[in-house]
Length: 434
Image (cartoon, rainbow, N blue to C red; front, top):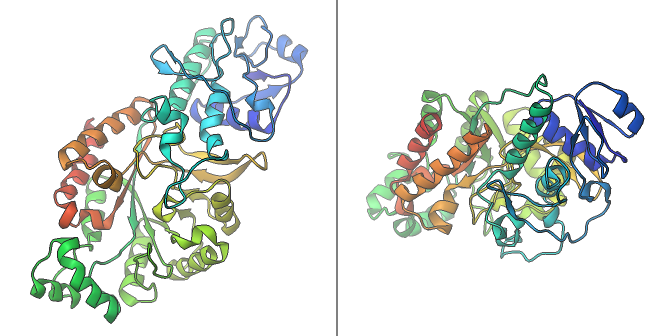
């Protein structure tokens, strides 16, 4: 396919690759020569302000021809039962510019603009265009791509589009490897004292048995997780914290034999990644130290990461990961709201807006987190499963990739997490049935 544009920019090249090639499976070439475009006989997409006969036509909104970052005046009406924006009016085959709209969402353009942050320095989802226009729970970029694909197939019936399939990837963050076991004497005593309120373990004898390994630690849910993932043949990735402990970092020392054994066992049989500490988001040196620790434990370069507390600052966080050589990040999602932070249910490459370039860092957006459902939304297990199945249906409808975020501790069946291991199992079963 040929794409005509009066101007070829890095933004246009990036979003064209995402929508046309990665989502629709179309090989394409962008031309700035109108004559060459008109004279060719292959399927054609005209991305310019003037109509060109015998081609599909999308009128540009202008965002892809700009440089720099500025406030955008965005109106987001509903058209054909889906929210659209960057409206271009009647005349073109679509009354909006799906390329500009998709670019705005997947680059997280709005998160580069001045904005308020929560107590952890995180972007508030309530400030997003998706939340304010009620489409945070819809993968609108996928909707727009599919609509464009239908338009192109109507004009060019012989055009072949990618045959997509639904996928799922279950991810586990290991914030606290163990509740009571394998800690220093001081931390063990503190854990034993705090355990009744935190874990619902009221027997001192039971707590001591856990400390000395006579009874399974409630956070030691690893073999259960691995068994379930194998039984239902689902892909999984585990993210381990290996930094120093602090107010928001409750992991144990990675030099301990039990923790190292746990990490290496998973590195041999499934995907593992780095779970950078709370403090590392503000210090590349700390991040590098933690990367080196995990590298030493697993004996190979670390390829995956997810930020602790989902701390994500554009573009700094991703630049630091790129500098380390990390190629996949799983932080793209909100802590307080489930949904599609980047408006898409597929992995995509990070575009650095300040440098105006596509990078080699692939972003894997997740749709929901256990803590969001239980702690932020205060849902009961049965209500949480309904919400989970809703998102599975949304992702399945566009044949995207469903990604969930859980913690080993949330499957402990202790305290506030009583009944949630069943939710996790039912979620996995729903991947085939919903």
